[in-house]
Length: 128
Image (cartoon, rainbow, N blue to C red; front, side, top):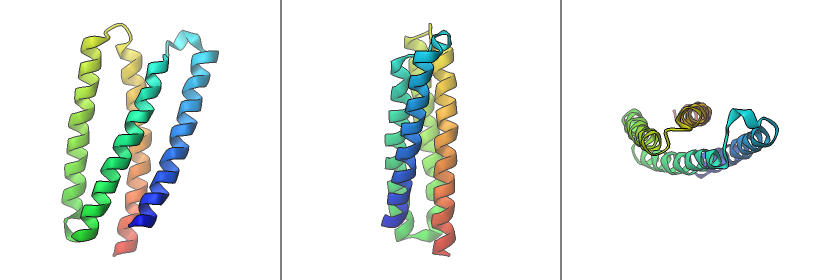
């Protein structure tokens, strides 16, 4: 389990650094996109929440692998609820740049979700 988490940590850190560099370059070189420094917090949010959920899921699955699917579906549901609340609160509080925030949020969500699913597939394949 430790190997899979460390591997996920390395890949997530690399993706986070690359996404942050890309957003920073967009801020400096494409100012018409209206990407702000606060959008970098989206990456930090997904980085931390991804690590927390991944760690919990791996720990629970290691104890009872037969419940892996249930744990995975529950984690997806919890994440979707939390992420939806974050988006709704942002839209309510910052209407002026809500479109760009939601766009960046969804793109980063898709990237981190793909990374997590690939990592979990490796975990499940090697347990069977």
